Amino acid sequence: MHVSHPHPKPRIDARSRATVFVMGIRMSEHDSTRPHSSEYFGEERNFFWNADFLDLMAARLALGRVRRAADLGCGVGHWSALLLPRLAPGASLVGIDREPRHVADYLARLQGGGRVEALTADARHLPLPDGAFDLATCQTLLLHLPDPEAALAEMIRITAPGGLVLCAEPNNLVARLPFGGAMVEEPPDRLVRRSEFAWRQVLGRARRGKGAEYVGELLPGLFARLGLEDVKVWLSDKAHPHIPPFSSPAEIAMAAAWERWRTEGVGPYERAEIRDNVLAGGGSESFFEAAWRDFVGEDAPGDASAAGGVLLYLIAGRRPGRRRSGASSAPERRANSAPLH
Ligand SMILES: C[S@@+](CC[C@H](N)C(=O)[O-])C[C@H]1O[C@@H](n2cnc3c(N)ncnc32)[C@H](O)[C@@H]1O
Image (tube, rainbow, N blue to C red; front, side, top):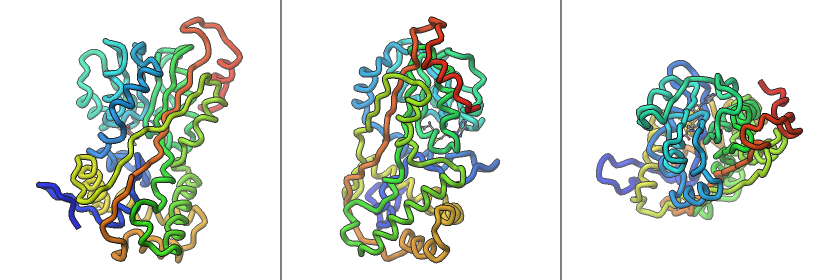
């Protein structure tokens, strides 16, 4: 089956559409030959947000007053590129990633003159001073970390009193569940098996210390526990509809991503990694084999449309205290004493 696109023609098959979207997920262990998340840096990342929704959020959060910002786990700059034009004129932005290759690509993408810098570092141990930023932010970083609270504590530490901590993180469990237009054509027992497959993958991945794909659900509580104030949560209003013949730029980009993952055996098609996750999530070998056949098998339903909803949260909190007051309030002490790094 093909989506309509002049050239090249990305192929999307029915099983891909049934699974809908997996945002920002990386399911393979980091190694020296393939930097973390590199398989997820395709064009599809340009379609995570509606621009006018980000304008609204920028107004609500007064991003126009931010003069110094840090983007942790910045990758090749997709999130930074959206934020930078919404910050104060002349604002500085520092991207931080543990992968030197991403940092180089980040600088190339942002091309911000003197305003944009980047450094290679672990988000959980930042070589940056306390209180140096008006905004510390990340997008789809924390779902990859076994200890997201460590990175969050660093975000709080480098944020000035009164400054903003802002995380865009999903609940990808929802994206893995089999729903969408195709589900009505599937036998219930297979839908149940595919749902169990999703749960066991996600829980097993977290148990293996590779991060919680549902981290978005945990963050509001974690923000409060680490002493952030004025905690607010929103959902991206971006849906990713699939409407045959799949010809919009977003559909074409997503189809290309699925094709890339399928042909390279990465991401959602990385069998060994997913098997390990399912087993760690309490699934048996025979369960994995059956569920894997469901996922990659040829007996998937045909053309189907879907509304393409995902759960991508935007979670915001303020570091207590007045800007640069130096006063040590009780909530601030709580934030600073988190035994996390
Ligand atoms: C899914 S990508 C997101 C990239 C970017 N924030 C975006 O939204 O396009 C996750 C990024 O986090 C980086 N990363 C993972 N663990 C990290 C860590 N401990 N410290 C710093 N960066 C890390 C990866 O190298 C990768 O670039």
